[in-house]
Length: 59
Image 1 (cartoon, rainbow, N blue to C red):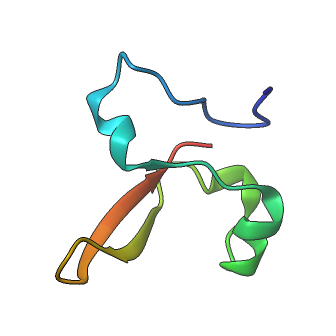
Image 2 (image 1 turned 90 degrees about the vertical axis):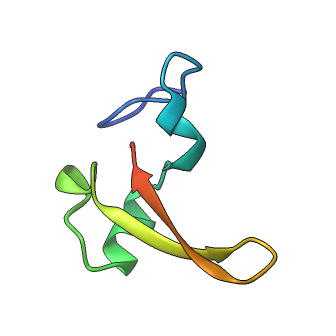
């Protein structure tokens, strides 16, 4: 898949396990400019205890 901005997942980056790829519609729904959404953080709820998990936007 060709990314408009940012990059795809890569095994060369250990931090990609907490990476997130969003589309332009998702960026707009978060009130972000899609062209500068890379490196922003989205906090999700995960794990057995419902802890907050930060994901970094890669593309």
